[in-house]
Amino acid sequence: MWSVMQRTVVFGFAAMLAAGPFAVADALAANKHVSEAIEHAKGAAKEKDAKAVTKHAEEALKHAQAAQKEVKNPHLDEGVNQLKEAVEHGKAGHADVAAKAADSAVMHLSEVK
View: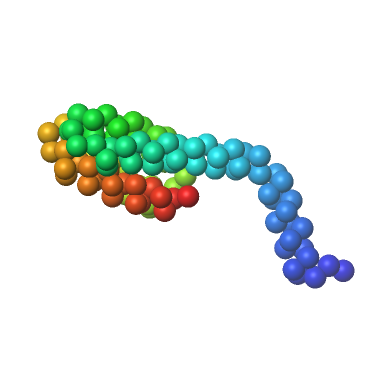
């Protein structure tokens, strides 16, 4: 007779095997998008020109939104919100405020990993 712990391990392992390839693929795709979003957001945060901040923030936003389709995470959601702010302020010519929003996005997106 198997103990409760042994059954839990065996059934858990079986469940991982059944869903594993799909779950792992989704997590890897989401992580790639999050990583790309972080890199572009870092680029936006370093820029001094509003158009350059906007360009990087828009690219970061695309990747962050793609990650949202794969992963549910409050830090990811807040990162997207901050990137939207960065784009909005960048388009308005507020480079410093846009860069700060992008920096805040980096902080939140870094918590997703």
